[in-house]
Length: 62
Ligand SMILES: [Zn+2]
Image (cartoon, rainbow, N blue to C red; front, side):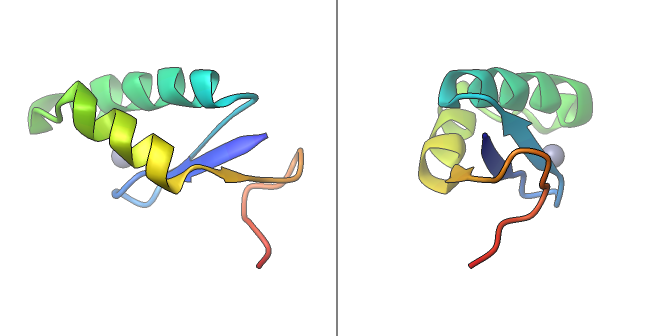
């Protein structure tokens, strides 16, 4: 699985980068609707910060 941390502290997860991106957009629309975060910022954040995680885990191990 793939995971990325939102700047608000929430960890988003998905089975692929594509799903992760979709989740990130959903999260932005639901939780940051008033922040006017551009699509490009969401995409960059996911691409730069996405990491592999073990299935079932919500945190990464170094
Ligand atoms: Zn957030």
